[in-house]
Image 1: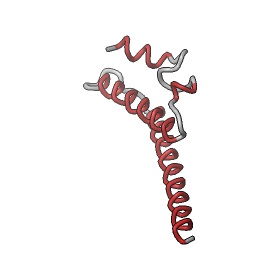
Image 2 (image 1 turned 120 degrees about the vertical axis):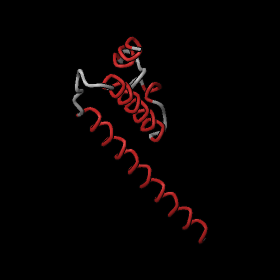
Image 3 (image 1 turned 30 degrees about the vertical axis):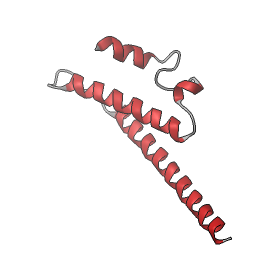
Image 4 (image 1 turned 180 degrees about the vertical axis):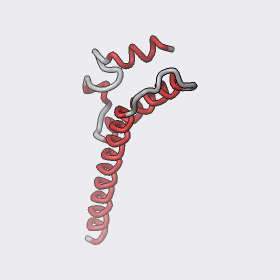
Length: 92
């Protein structure tokens, strides 16, 4: 019986951690979306591309933590109609 209680507690802790990570990833995405590019400054294009890649990875990780991929659900980066991936690929 004690093993069952411990496993229940472990499962609860894992769920809390999963929700915390998802919340933090959403905060990261919001911060990246608030950033205003400083056109004309050295290295800005690289920063914009790196930020887009980081946002895409954060969205993919959120989808994984929720039990699937954003692409599988038809939302997020790479899904049909997602212009950000097309635009990003065209700029490279």
